[in-house]
Amino acid sequence: MRRVSTGSALSRAALGALTRAAREIAGPGTFGFGADALPYAEANALLAEGEGPW
Image (cartoon, one colour):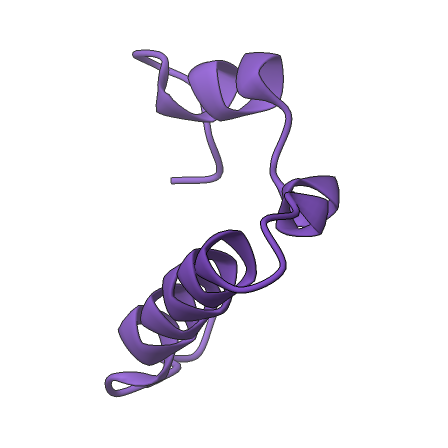
């Protein structure tokens, strides 16, 4: 396995998604950004103890 450095790219990508979602809600008042959301059950499974790729 090799080390991969993403620098601040992952945090900036998350902040970008949050910003786009906020602008969509504040602007047209729509919630289309939710289509890209990770399903709740999948998020819970990734964060469960003993689960995940790590």
